[in-house]
Length: 82
Image 1: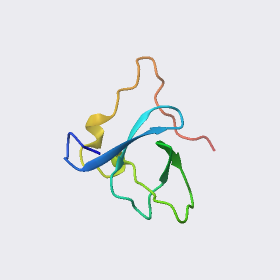
Image 2: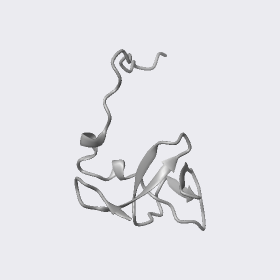
Image 3: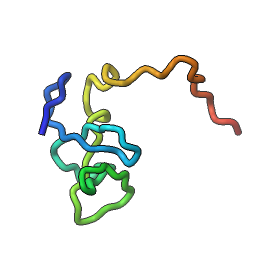
């Protein structure tokens, strides 16, 4: 277990299905959107009987300071077309 370097909350590290590191709140949350499968954070809609976790980016008051800048040349997000 680790602690968030910004807010000091206990976190655990997982890896997403694409291989990126992802901090999760250390305490399971019945409303969490992720389950851990061998250290991999898997997004779930409905999971019963297993611990669910919340991304620490969703609960950290300083989450924006940890976001990586988009590479130069990345087009801005555009609104959805109807």
